[in-house]
Image (cartoon, rainbow, N blue to C red):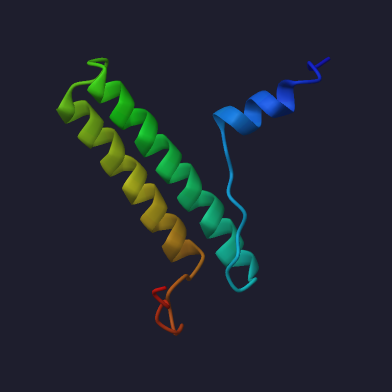
Length: 88
């Protein structure tokens, strides 16, 4: 059985921000993928800074993540025939 504080630990280690954009299922999924991408890039950057990864390995891993995010965007048809983003 999981500890009562397990959810608190997971929320701390894997934080998720709320989605405030126009609700469409594909946008919600892409937002989750984007948050995952950002979180993993942060981990990779920290590992490289700490000397646990070489700059080349960090670049390679981030490039792979970027390709996965681009594939996700394409699969979800994000950005096709849509209005340009509003910059606040």
